[in-house]
Amino acid sequence: MRSQIKNLPNSKIELLIELLAEEFDNFYRKANFDLKEAANLAVREKYPQIILEKNIEAIGKPNVEILKLAKDNPFSFKIQVDILPKIILPDYKNIAQQVKKQETKIEIIADPDNQITESDENNNKGVKVLPKLSKGKKMTV
Image 1 (spheres, rainbow, N blue to C red):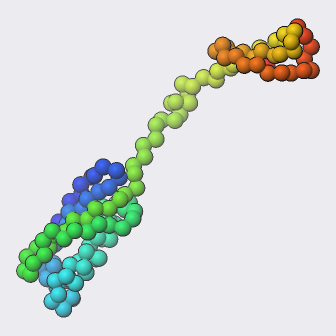
Image 2 (cartoon, one colour):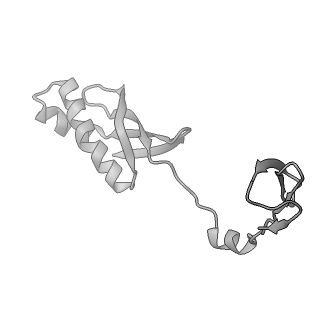
Image 3 (tube, rainbow, N blue to C red):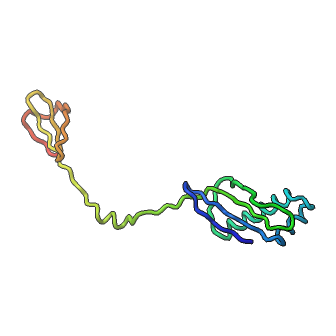
């Protein structure tokens, strides 16, 4: 048996599998000399075997396509299957060392109309009403 793995986009792979004529002949005899049944037996036995041997994390139902099926010849088929996507995490420890805590200073000043203007270091301004703050007093948060 020969097998080849081809990576496809969107977390899929394609397996190209070829059984030698002698190997396929065993399945042909088990299937009472029915080619279609022999092909089904071969796929059902060889697909899980290859998945385990190659450590493929297959998910979902495989799509099987028979490429060559004839008596006394090699049997070849192709399987496309979804796999778990490869996730590569960044070096989070290095990133954490680079990130510095940034403190934002907010200053709140009461104006005569009892409107409180809030601004931060980025000059983002908003208006909030805080009636309990006396006029002219400052509060830094």
